[in-house]
Amino acid sequence: MSATTASAVVVSHALPRWRRAALWTTLAVFAVLWFGGVASAWLGVGRGDDGALASLFLSTAGLVVLLGGSTGRGVLLLACVALLGFAFEAIGVRFGVPFGRYVYTGALQPQVLGVPVVMGPAWMVLVAFASDAAGRLRLRGWKAVLFAALLTTATDLVIDPLAANRLGYWRWEEAGSYYGIPLANFAGWFLTALVACRLAGARANVWAGFVGVAIMLFFALLALAHSLTVVALVGFALCLARLLTTRLSSPR
Image: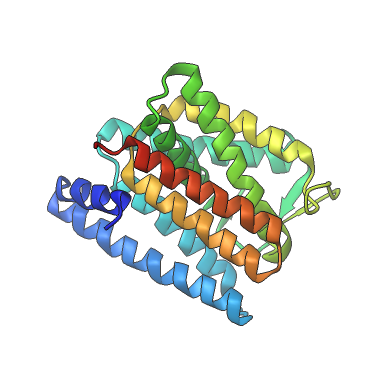
């Protein structure tokens, strides 16, 4: 059993029974969607409800992170991060800042203010993943915030080439230099992540680390299936780096 899995099991036993049951049930749904998504990509099988399944996948990921939170304050801050991420997305599609001009397609539903509701949980998961890594490295203050913001931005190097192009969840008004993604998008991600990671703090959340690695591996495998080798390598590197932080932070 890996250190991450062992820690997750220990943490889950400390939760109330109802919450533990909800956590493992949600995790089972997440796992089924994960394997189904990877298998569909590699087999070249397309479905008419791919967008709905993607929304469910991200929603269950967010729910796992929330249910796995160790304190009420931590859960509340994560919920605030989700609202913050959604707010920045709403500003982005309306005014073209801070990510550049883009528009969401109808693939991800439901939507409010032109933004899929699931974008809130998506931001929350990635920020919690990065904040957990900063906490495990025992970073504090602005060092933790900067590290977590950079890690959050790095995850977008893996997600965007697939989500915007292959999966068609949104469209850019003007193509950029990184697989059609404008560099301004990554600057916007970093600025948004700075605010979100400052709000979240360097807070341990074993389940955020687990889900974050699973999502990075998911997109890396999809990238490999679509011959996006560089994207896949970045995703695998992020997974390896995250697992190393878990290893280094484990008691000897």
